[in-house]
Image (tube, rainbow, N blue to C red):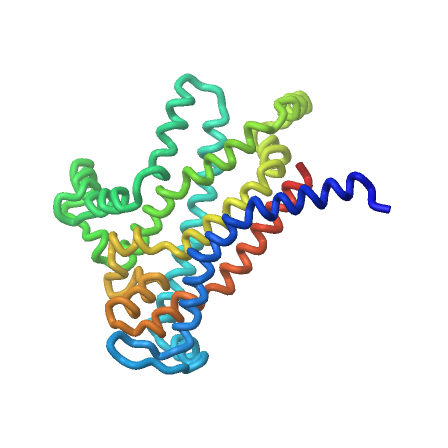
Length: 298
């Protein structure tokens, strides 16, 4: 015999499926269809103005043998690693500072979020002017301080250009870490810190044994999400350096765009864009599990 609760839950589930079905169909149309289309293209030798044929995994195997792809893959991994580390460290530090009581804290919080809310085009062009070797603000500041005697071409030297794109990504993405971690810190009971202080724990000990364990789940989730965004970053690097100089800042996203849109090799371009898809799928799976875990614990 069916229990009333089971009948109610089934009815509720049917209603939930009906309610979300339009959204799921919409997402399938704007996301799933383009992805499937891109996968199909990556399995062909499609070029603009020429007939295409099925080549299987030949595009992927050819990419793995190309120095340009290996260079772009290494650049992407290094760019992601240094950017995520920078954003995580600064995000934790900023969240700790903004969690303290001080005059004007709300204003500082509002100003802190500006880099994240600015259109990426505007932010990237502003940073390009800052790093410019002719009339750039950074060169002007260093000149005024007497630290340099001639302008530095920050975006024209491979090592400096790579550091520049990392700096911009960290500047833009740190507020996301800060907001997420600050929201979690605000929910930590003050009694825990008071009890630790009575027991003689200092600031470092309170952070290590109270704050860090409480924000660990949010930090992991934020890091995973930001990693996906950073791996797929295109606009910032393209506007700042275009992948140069000498391909020192060429990422997988830029290589894919250059191959497909500049050289008109659509099949190979789609393959280069999708080759990191398994990594992203694993990250998405971990994020989903982490989110469900937090819901169950709440």
